[in-house]
Length: 120
Image (cartoon, rainbow, N blue to C red; front, side, top):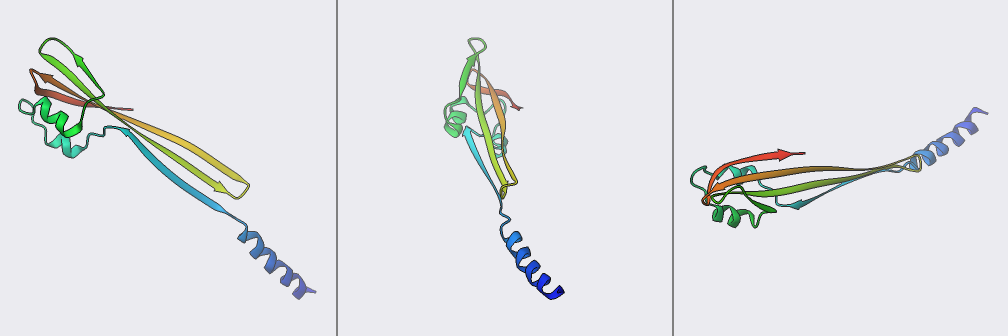
């Protein structure tokens, strides 16, 4: 009697574990202009020009005039990560995580005076 039960349990075990489907994937998209640490390391306060920065990074997301001599350029990048996980029919999960980084550059008469980052 014990042998037929084992012969039934073994195929049932393989059948059940074979039906377990686990999936997980992740996708990250970036929009805007990412300002790398390498680019920031090339900047020299009092020397780097606005023209050089625009040539290196492209046009900023916005420009603000503080006064007739001072201008602030703003570059913003957003990284969005989508994640999906599933376990056969029992569990299904989707998530979205977003990180934003804004880098500001202050120029006076076209020469860099300071820069800073703001992260969310």
